[in-house]
Amino acid sequence: MKPQLAESVFVRACRREAVPHTPVWYMRQAGRSLPEYRRVRAGVEMLTACATPDLVVEITMQPVRRYGTDAAIFFSDIVVPLKAIGVDLDIKPGVGPVVGTPIRDKAGVDTLRPLEPDDVPYVTEAVGALTGELGGTPLIGFAGGPFTLASYLIEGGPSKNHDRTKAMMYGEPELWHSLMERLGAITLAFLRVQALAGASAVQLFDSWVGAVAPQDYRTYVLPHTSRIFAGLADLGVPRIHFGVGTGELLGVMGEAGADVVGVDWRVPLDEAALRVGAGKALQGNLDPAILLAPWEVVERRARDVLERGRVAEGHVFNLGHGVLPSTDPDQLARLTDLVHEASAR
Ligand code: 1CP
Image 1: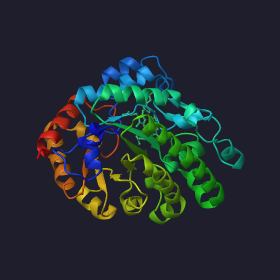
Image 2 (image 1 turned 180 degrees about the vertical axis):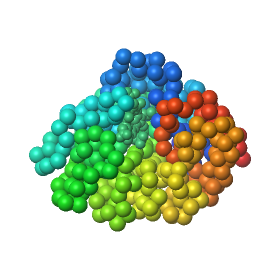
Image 3 (image 1 turned 90 degrees about the vertical axis):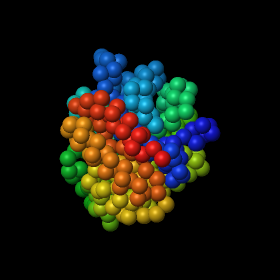
């Protein structure tokens, strides 16, 4: 990593080093809520946009230019590596990822081949171009966690209860583990491509893993997540681990090997620090819906997040989940300034 990036406020906070102010970025900061995003995306399908480096660079830069966040998040989607190895899937506007032939048996699992860097040349190209454009601002690469990817593949699309996913997990553990092994390897390869091309940190979005109880996480998910984080260790980039509704999982997630644990809005950061345990930085965790309230409310609640975040060994300010599409970008601009000013030391 370039010294300028290794010494950036964001990377230092991930490493639990002293920082001049709390760094801030927002999950899903690119896209949906920005008019300039809607303009460049008009008439371009989501997966086409993800495979077009010029567009990826532009969309990734948009929130950094507008807000002055301390990090950029690569514009892509968690299903991009699956599409790249030939899974029949699409991202349907207003729905999300939809899989043509859901994976529910051994023959299905066997169709998932390993990901090679040559499968995603547009990712390597876009990350490379972005590291130039971004200068001293770190780029965060990302991938979907194995449980979340498995859920889309098994259910065939977004799911509320993950019924079929859990049915396989509990009922056909061997099949489950072979699916998770393949997804874990694909995820690791995809994260390595981004880090080797110049990303300064990586985040694993296991968004829906909060559906699993702690003891089941340990049995059915942890071995696979641990292998992903261990497989990144040699690259020296901070590893962030995030899921939604993971209050009961924070302890066991802390064991998976990430440097930073992302916390949703349900657990205050001072309490989360106790649950995650020593030796980790925390990321989070303003409820994204608070941004829909008047500024005075946002300010009071953001100060509370900063205050509680001081208990953690390192704190990266973020929302507790992605920016909601109806969010007024001006609220995020004000919030970014507030975090920088209120945390200056
Ligand atoms: O800042 C950014 O927006 C970066 C780009 C980004 C990221 C980090 C996108 C673009 N997707 C993601 C990750 C992602 N994708 C996650 C993990 C983060 C999270 O929990 O929000 C998940 C679960 C997905 C799957 C997905 N892709 C959904 C959710 C569906 C569901 O199950 O509820 C949706 C709606 C998509 C499509 C998508 N991905 C990204 C955008 C901008 C969109 C909207 C599609 C469009 O504009 O046509």
